[in-house]
Image (cartoon, rainbow, N blue to C red; front, top):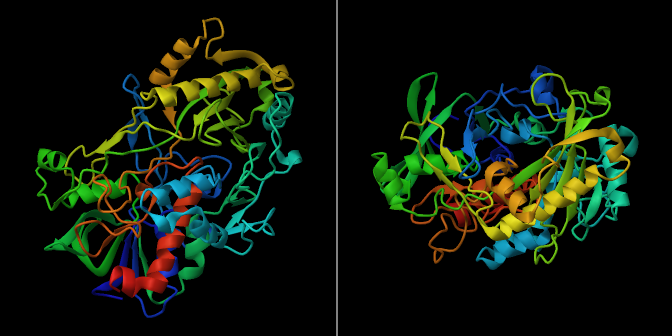
Length: 513
């Protein structure tokens, strides 16, 4: 396992851990998986913040990134997992698929391998759905366990929210991953009790015993090393020591914020951006970091009549409403979801209901702060500058306010503290709130978008192979051409399944292995 590897995967997150696990199923292929954060080989030694699926891990295993959501907004934390499992090890465990139309749109943009009918087998292969595993569009034997809360398991906030949804006329949808479904119901979640089923647990636990797989934690990837235009290795740093690790194929799965940053530090990206930081240009590819896509959201905040019902040890999210904005051509382009509590410092007195725009037209940018691999990227979302996005989020915000005024949820509310109901809530004023205060759903993608070589904004082809260089593949949320109409973690795992299977079964044909 020393010397040159067949496959080197950078990032043991939602996609990277899957790729390493699938690729190492071939005992003839040596695989090295690099992770910047720590590794916990078994659940017994896994820290509680990673086990606790009731809430996100915000600090102990985080990169410490930040972002600016809108032109008028302030910088805010942008949680990203720095640990084996990546963000799948620190997130809310929402296991939601995008709409079939999302993936068909990717296919129509020149990526036919990503049509819904082709990605569905990967979704089925990754999941062990304990509720609907017998349905033709679900799997029942995969490494990621998915289940939904029963009514008796819901917090009182979520029970009241669901009843208010019924009163408002939304249909019940017991399986939010039904490709034809819409309405309100329990969230599908990748957890067993409190245990978060990350890709580190679901995929790497079984793969660790393979002698051809090596996992190397606490190792920061600084850049990809090239000989001419062929990627031959990566420059890494461990405890201040810098070295080069070589491989026949390099796969970047460092996430939508880190993969484009590594590419730019390696000389692949917009010429002006690289020259600004004194980085030698290898390939001028304008699409690196220039099509950032994410979900803007705004929450209605309420002060609870009985604060004793709010408990930070409760699951923070349990339910969801997927529906379509009036007049929209994009099915299920809006989401409303309740939060069991809204901590704003001090005692818990508030809970919140979030309005989320799931299909977006506007894009943001990701740039380098400097050529220093330790410097976080500069992330600017520019949410709701596109009027099509802003008008639909305003409509969703109005629908969210209606929940607060509907029994039995209204019976739990002393007052709505945001938006202030004493102020005029015209479309214009709500639109101004969206322009000033929209926040990220923490679903960044499309920073290394895939597409054919004829697409000047595409960075990789549909197999993740980087245009204009050899031996370099990108496979994570960054290659999505657009954000899906869903939380992105399950789609990121699916991307790992797709690319991992191609490496395993078509490695020689597609990746020169």
